[in-house]
Image (cartoon, rainbow, N blue to C red):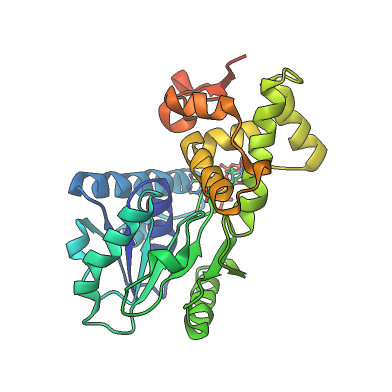
Length: 289
Ligand code: 3HC
């Protein structure tokens, strides 16, 4: 099958890598609004694969084969894919625009599935007006390593599309779970308020950053503490998801912690901006308190 991945950021490049590693996928178009962004995404994939070679988990030949399947460029290179996974910025209007533009290529392949990796937005709204309704195919960061795919049905999504995306997820070695559209779906509805709560706990002076993270790692067996995970996801993304859940439910329990807003305004976004709850200068990871 041929797959178009729209958006070559952290999630888009991880998703493209996941597809390219699958023997049943012959071609992956990794697209972005600028060619250089798409190339940078492929560069990230190369770096991740090189690490696997260095660890003896993959051969150079396998890496070359995987990279050879990935073509980068603008959305217009994405000709007649069987599946499009949109992983662009978490903004309703821009997601709708991506699909509006792509329709012109897609109409030649009426069986093409429109999927979005949106982390919390309405699948029904993103897909409104498309020749066939959209579906949520939500991967988790880092996409090549995380085993879950949330398969989200909007109100108009066909059951046959849900079944097909579940099959494709299994083909990728993932475990799919079927979810009805709702703000934050399942994982982010539970995970993101937990991270927000950890930020409240920190702002109230109850414990230091490292101690909050150690508490949740050792007390709950989480692989990462909530504050380091917030940094890893990106605090801007955490805030955007919370805003959606808060806005759509109107429930004050989802109000973002004022410190989270302040950090995002100050570009303290976590790993991607070099500082969040931890400082990542010189490859270190030092709590800022
Ligand atoms: N890209 C590709 N693969 C990666 C990777 C990356 N950036 N980071 C790690 N991996 C792979 C490694 O290659 C390795 O695979 P292997 O076992 O086949 O060699 C495996 O993951 C384990 O990696 P490491 O041994 O280097 O490191 P750790 O054992 O410390 O695991 C981790 C790293 C997988 C990131 C782990 O800390 C973890 O699971 N953290 C929690 C991540 C999480 O909760 N993600 C969900 C975030 S929420 C989300 O994404 C939803 C969104 O909508 C916001």
